[in-house]
Length: 267
Image (cartoon, rainbow, N blue to C red):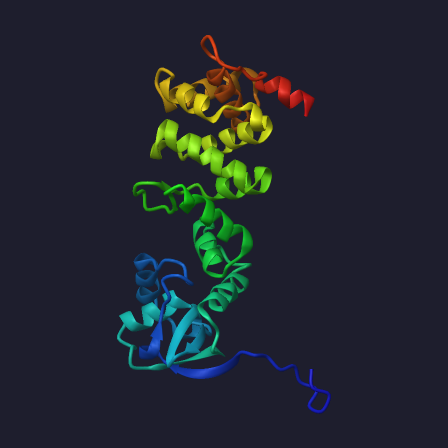
C-alpha cells in the first residue's frame, strides 16, 4: 500500500484487449468445451460476461480465465471487437497456469484439468506423479488411449499415502498383470495399499503372476473384493487390498505374506 496515495497497487490492471489477439494455451488452460461455448453464445448477454483475465506475452494475449466466454463472443461474430480484461504483463506459461489455479480455487474445475494445469505450473506433487507415470510408459489422461490413467484422484491419494516409489511399483504391478483395464480407481487404491503395507515382503514378480493368472483376471480381483465387502461391510479399497492378498497367497510354494486383516489390525 502506498502511504502517499493510500491505495493498494495490484500487478494486474484493466485494459481493453482486441479479441482477435487472444489465444488459449493448450497446456496452461482447461480443455475447451464446445457445448459450453454454444450454450453461452445461445443466451448471450454482454452484462453476464464479466471481466476475463489475460496475460500479454510476445504480443499475444493468452487467456487465463474466461476462455469459454471469449469463444462465445467469437462465435456470435464479435471477433473484431475489444473487451475489457484484467491484464497481466509478461507472465511465463508456468505462471499463467499457477494464476489459473488460484483464480479457480472457488470454481468447479475437474480433478483432471486441475492436475494437468498443476503439471504446467510445476507444482511438486502433480509434477512428480506425472514423472512416475511417464517413467512407466503411461500417461494421465481421460482420452482412453493406450496406457492412459484417468483415475487422477487415486494417483493423488496413493502418492500422498505411500510415496512415489510405492506408487510406481503399484502401477507396474497393475500394468503387467491387467494392462489398461486395470487402471480403475478401486484397483489403484487397493494395490497401492498392499504395496505400502507389505513393502519388501511383497514379491513383485509373484504378484504379477498370481493376479494375471487368476481365473477371470481382473474380474477375479474385483469379484472377490465385492464378496469380501458384502461379508465385512468394509470400504471397497480395503476389500480390494484383501482380495489381492488372498490371490497372492493362493497355490503352493513361494513366500506367502500375512493376511490383510491381520496386518491391518496390527497397524
